Length: 403
Image (cartoon, rainbow, N blue to C red):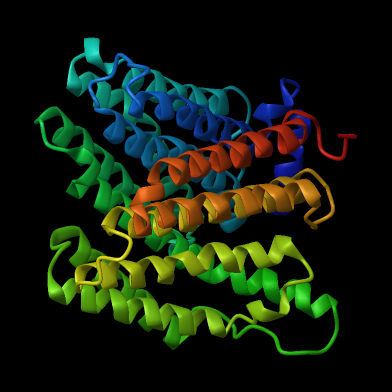
């Protein structure tokens, strides 16, 4: 019996809500809703018009709830969907999946009302989902003998450790929004994008181009050049985590950025403009080297956009756009729709790009920062609320049903 057969049997056996039939469904709905809602809350928090009962200051809460809140949901949805395909084992469905989603929701509520709770209890609740995921996925990979994907579990564990460090820094009175916990968590996620994206971007591009006939195809991934590029990025990110202002860190980030642009040039992204669903994968990935180059420029003394704005190339650009790219593609594919981007999908991609550009412009032209920050926030809300509106019905309804 094949893995595909057993997976489909598991789906057919589930008679409960459709949203609990596959890992991507609850998390790809909850994550974007939280991305939009948390931004709606943060804008008045930053203006002093709203106070939440959280121990975190507004910027720290915002940084945490994007990196470890929103992104934690998307990582969970992606891995719960991908690992059964990697290992040939059964997916998590039904009430166990509901339990994982409940852990994520408990983390969001607990962090938001953390002012009246012990810091250790808040951290334990918030870390529960990643801990459960790491144990489950690690077991699946070991039992399935899918050793090539064990580094992904290692990065997930590192992501959880970064969240724990973030909580410790916040509880000790440090400004966690600029602390080592945030840098370590961001570095772990960027390596996930570099490793997983380095496989799926050229693979999906090759599949799409091959259907269109002759022409240049992407270089097969994970050869020596890719391994060197990943090693350089890892070294640069580790330097940034532990010595974020050192000259050697700036040089390492600059080198990693250039090498990863060269890596992308091997993926034939310039041939994908006819299908935004493929093109957006390249656009999402390009923010990884662009963020490295901007970070290098800030460390080495340009001071043009500021370190915070440069970092948003990674966070809002690399993470924001790449997660939207993955969520749209996975939702369309796993619900039986055609793999093509409609006008609504293109609009939410454009909204995220506008949010990134406006945020970077705010650093370059501080006299316009208020207007540009508002534009960035509004565009971000439009993108993720738009995803929930467009793709929520697909996530809530059975495969191949009318939307």
